[in-house]
Amino acid sequence: MKKGLLISILIIGLLTAFYFAGPRPEVISLDTSLPEIEASIEELDHYLAVREAAFELRKDNEARIIWADSIRQTEWVVLYLHGFSASQGEGAPLHQHIAEKLGANLLLARLAGHGYQKEQLGEYTALGAWEDAKEFLALAEKLGQKVLIMGTSTGCSYALNLAAEFPSKVKALINLSPNIRVKDPNALLLDDPWGEQIAHLVLGNQRRVVSDSAGHALYWDTLYTVHALVELENLLESTLIPETFARVKQPVLNLCYYKSETEQDPVVSVAKIEWMHELLGTPENQKRLVKLDKVGNHVLGSPVKSKDLPGTEKAISDFLDEILLSEN
Image 1 (cartoon, rainbow, N blue to C red):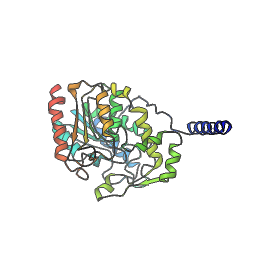
Image 2 (image 1 turned 30 degrees about the vertical axis):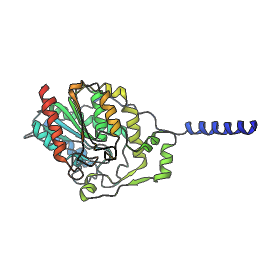
Image 3 (image 1 turned 45 degrees about the horizontal axis):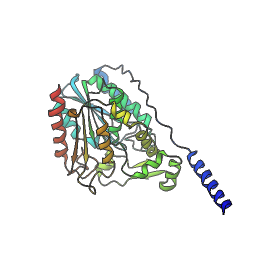
Image 4 (image 1 turned 90 degrees about the vertical axis):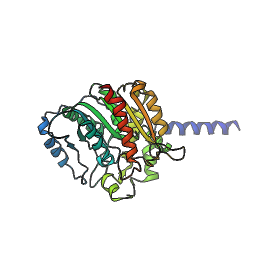
């Protein structure tokens, strides 16, 4: 009896050791050097056109500038960062309306691996997209005296890191459905030992999302690799931690879909949004969490998916009037 028990304990111990010794993603370390953009403001349209021409992109997915009126620096600039598998269309026309309210230039980013006609997200890495996010922040500085970053989902993940790492360069954040953690608890396994290997067995090499409209097929990637999902989860667990949130001291608006325990954002964790919001270093009177109960979707800023675009826009407008603009 004792011998059998010892053998069982030994086997369990060996299996446990084997599991924890298995391959897993390394903790991400973000490079915090900001690139130098040598182009003048008059050359930025051409700069972005050349940058985007290097890729075969779907229509209207390219990075670009929407000028407030003419080619000049404005007091505010709105930098829009899209979410994982998305594009600027995920926030249109809301980002344009907010820029117009501020009389601001609008910079629409396209992060690494997104918007391709083929090989969707095949080249996505968390650090590659981070390098792009830094590049767009450097571009935004040329377009406006004060940078307001507006993001959706994983765009907010990068925005929070930008605000933490470059506090003097980011004036404020508007986070639409910020991706702090994915709602599906199984996503946590992707960053654990053997996570990618297990995901390949369960999901295969790629995951396909069925388009529910022409707009969805145009503005969202519908086929992406399991490795891209691993990269995403590694970004969240490595960087969206209490220490990061505490270093964010700018005015912040967090928006999410929440109606009840059974009717809420199906993609990201609302509980983790609340967790992040509480831990922000932002003064209490300069941060706001608004739960929208009519949007019915993870995507808040596009009529392609949102059921209450006016409600989302009003929440942002109120934040601008009552907090951001009243401080300036």
